[in-house]
Length: 64
Image (cartoon, one colour):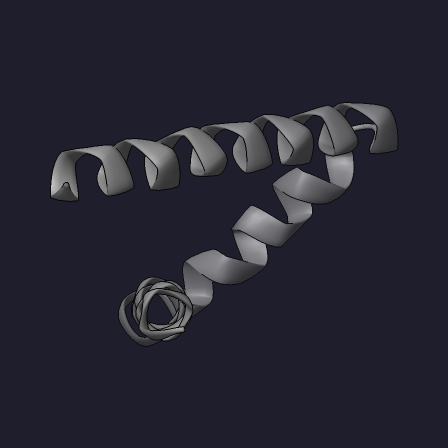
């Protein structure tokens, strides 16, 4: 359970940094994302899920 809390906390830190350090760039990023077709966004999302899963697995293996 602590692993899940740690993961959620890290996600919130990274997401919060985007809002805190570059709030005006966020609008530009959203406009760029809107230009990507929905199917391509879905594939990018699935790729991110796969990469995240691999990184979590790797972190667990390295931790022992």
